[in-house]
Length: 187
Image (cartoon, rainbow, N blue to C red):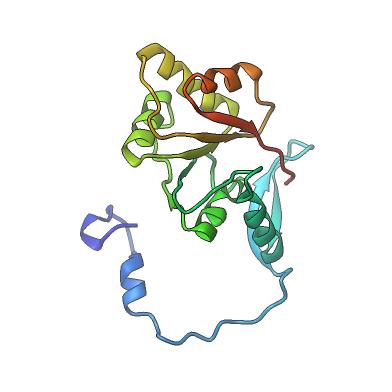
């Protein structure tokens, strides 16, 4: 989110979040609908390798968001700063943004620099406490830390998915005080 004066050049009309809120209504008639109504569609290659849309219901997103906040899952809380290094079009960034909103955690979304140095700088500047990504994301950050001797001052937990989490990554991050765990899901 940004203000109009800080917004990037954009051809056409651009809505600014704060302006939308300012002109909002005090009373809003919330629609009523079945909990199995579609809320989002993401894409997966699944088991066939061919991209296909997967529709999520309101019910599935709410249940997954509650479950992700459990201590034995992501364990997100209001004091956390979440940075999902997972695209929104891939399982809604593993639904982490919904879970963060549920508990009031701060959310930071990655910019274009997804290399080890870029992620490290963002983690430190934003005081990220929890992140999620595929093994290559975690491996690139670990290589950067080992090469530079830098420490992770705020990151405490991480979720890895997309493929199996190598034991070497778990041990590598444990040296920095970060609990890295494997996540599994189905699209």
